[in-house]
Image (cartoon, rainbow, N blue to C red; front, side, top):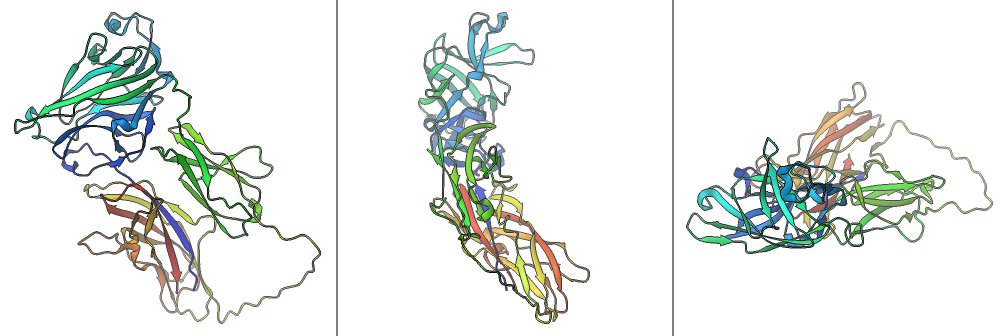
Length: 489
């Protein structure tokens, strides 16, 4: 009986839904300081929670999206946002034609940040008139700030403008998601102060009070993202062939960026080559003598741009000692009458990484789907007693910070990919992820992957399974890893 192991990693985080019927499903909350420079974000996200009106930042630059406090966010208007005021009378409010401005446009530019405002999280009937007032109450910085949008004819409509006095107020209906052009007249550091005010359906007034938002326009002081990256886990000494090497990317400070790429450079290679499929925070592989002296590094990406890169670490694998030796012939005999039953996975493919979880259609679960990847069962026993291959995650899933959840929340739908003629292998039943009050215990208990009845099974079969992770929405955000033990008896 053989028991190979396959490590399964899954990411669980939040996803904001604009659909009013599912507003009870809250996105993950993040407390780390981050810099947002590309992608979509609802910078001014109005919410009513716990009897209070609040301003948040809904960050869609990561997937799944997260909700942040404005104090934890720096909005970076990249140098590429620099442009000139159009030579058109309708745009004179931005300054003289041809003068330099830094603009985040109303229509998304993938190379820039795309901030907007959002009231889709406000339920109908909570606020009087189903409206909220968003005001720009202050601007502190080296230049003026203007927010404007254009209609279908290209005519601009100013929403907020600091040069002619503040506060400026905008009445916004609930369930609104909108974008505008954000224009800064000079590079440097800005603090924009927003405030939201409303009246509850009961007649009581509610307000967020002034909330500060930090913007950096142009080059950031010192350049870069402010994030450093290192690799931990590489042993100081030599590994033995067959040892498992697990490397971990360490972000300092820990931020919202989660897309990595691992690279390797073998002795004699001209440069580093991306390791296909290795885009997570950890990378595990088996040490072999052929890898001796290989260097590994990891890069962190903000969209397509490299946000940080680690220093390389080197792998050293023990070689046979040099010296005199003798040769000895080895004779092996295979007893066909006894044979063996072996279950195995490719040593170079022992890790399965599920996509980041997303909210289910019913809004009550975080779910992710993937595949186990082929498992091989070989039966050479002439007696043909039959066999059953099964799997179980006994230790559950665990994140880097020690948070856990049960292996029962992972289920599978087995399939037989390939088998010999007359081998008689059949796929096991569906193992349904655990949901309170419903049948199914997933892979927290032993679940059959496939079986061959007595008199069958002789030969080699390749098995696979569609994996489904389904966890409650209150599961703590993070990347979790569990070990699936596969057994054939």
